[in-house]
Length: 321
Ligand code: F6P
Image (cartoon, rainbow, N blue to C red; front, top):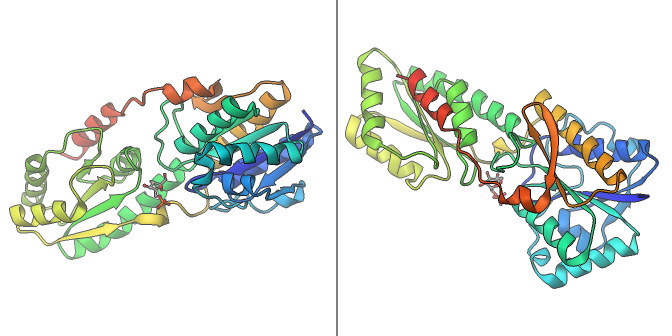
């Protein structure tokens, strides 16, 4: 193994830079040449590769986003696009590729490995925490902390105006950002796609809180649930008469300096990916189980069913009575 490349793909996540840095520096430490691919699979298809040095990843550990930039590549979804990507890897004589991204990026890596025989390693880079084979993904902890800080600010103003606020958070079909931030932020109610939505219970809880002297209610709505934030706010207003606002947190959840936890996760996973490539292994998905960095066969990893954290949902409900 002499030349490896690294790319980030799909939605960016805080900690991707820490992962790039770990891959580059571990690779160089192990005597490899390391290339960075710009803009994910798009850049791979277009041959946008540049050799990385120890200093080209200096000063990025604490930064959100991704220095290599990222994209959701439609061309890579075609066989022709993947063939072209393989040709580029041959042109640059790359014999191992580290892909940092979410579910779609991992599936792309699997296809590249199966169809074209490219040695790939994947690192779970997404704020969503929606991958079944790993306890946590890179970026999730930072996103939860960003939501947490937003909840604190919104609670101040909601309380001052006796308001109910529906805060919409990201996560696609996964409710983990909503659940972790709602539980740790003391939200009055959390709605996630993995648990049934009971609007009666929600309104009852809000009214019970008001009757006890509460001045605000914070409702966290994961973007993946069926009922929209507007419908939810309208229903709450109709049934309780309360002034109900909506805050869609959006892309602020994807930015910001990664937390220590995300930097640690990214650093350990990046290191592991290079060590596995060095040992001659291929087609692996790196994850974390407990506090151990693990590697699964990529195909198997993608088939893991995600277990929804329903016991945390119960806890959130108990603690917000
Ligand atoms: O997968 C990360 C994520 O931020 C999701 O939480 C969100 O639904 C989606 O990406 C938004 O994607 P885009 O950047 O294409 O708008």
